[in-house]
Image 1 (cartoon, rainbow over the protein chains, first blue to last red):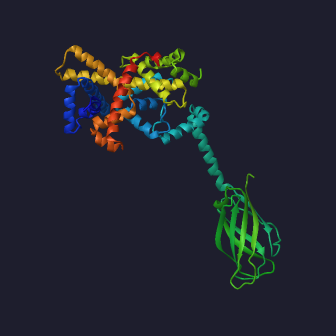
Image 2: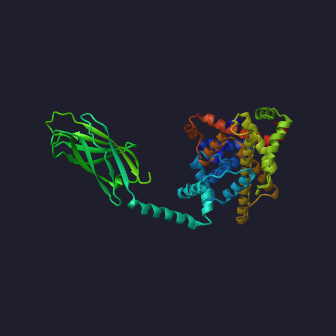
Image 3: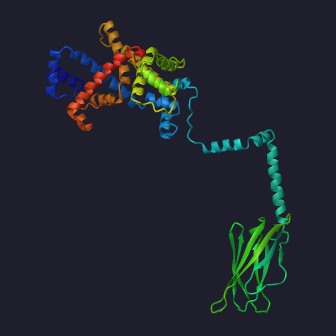
Length: 286
Length: 182
């Protein structure tokens, strides 16, 4: 075998992976070509360096590149890599020392965020938002507490004696004008309910039911289920009666639409009507 | 000087450009924050070699300034040097704790010197060679097995190992040159 061919076998000879026949050829070549000894030395060093490097990697140490890149903040978009290096640095004193040295040579070493502390972050944000009030309140913490107590006392004290007025105005009609005065309903102080009488145009059908809906400006429909059934016939108006709970409106003031849908009994030849009223809710302070 | 101009000048061996880049490297390598390593001049030389290869291979993408890039490569090289020297100290300690039969002190010194140079070469050689060496020496695969793994011919695998040897010699020669020789 020629020298050039033998040189190509030396790394495998050093690794001990040559077939027996080739191994004998190399050993014979070492006698014939003294220059092969330099090859042997080179590949022995290569083997040692490779094995040592591999053993170092097997311990999980980040490469020099990874450690420097981490210090420079290049893994910001790779939180998994950053987290594993950070974890390693906590456990490996040597790598931690290396990191400190790298960081010391950087103008501004990057800081990676610790795993998120949601509660802590929220507190920090609240502090940032309320920095000035916080600064004011800190010397007199009792002031904030007192304000809360006073506010709550006024609010809860006022509620039972307050009242709500509701103005009901007939807006849409098809069968007849209801006529009469616009009913003004007023809750009595301390009461929780109000009886609500609505006069609607006359119907000639006994047993007609009325379905009542109240819709606020946000189209939040509130239904007042119940059977509002005519009990008598007269020439003027039918009266239906239902009850509004104070909690339904108070203290929500504003404009509402009250709709009464006629639900005629089977066999009626009339077209069901819809009566629409505008309901304005006010509080005493308005 | 613009980065692109500086790169062209550096690769062309212009002394001013070489000085600018070498000064950046030196600013990192000789930073007072480093400790545990001694051969700072070797690190400068190794970094210049790396920078030359990277710039020749057009690996600088301009995502940062050239100065930041060069400084980063210098840091990589310093850390490699620190690790090499630490391993060397550990081996010395092992030898003290477990004495072995040694050759003459002079032979030992020369071998240590050669080993130190080889480690630098190992850190500078390309990833493909290190990968191949790992297959040969760590996984202990025969060239026939490597050929199958790498989907290559047996002869090509043998030639690749041989080329890595040549590259290593080339690196050894380069790192002993003055940076100005390019």
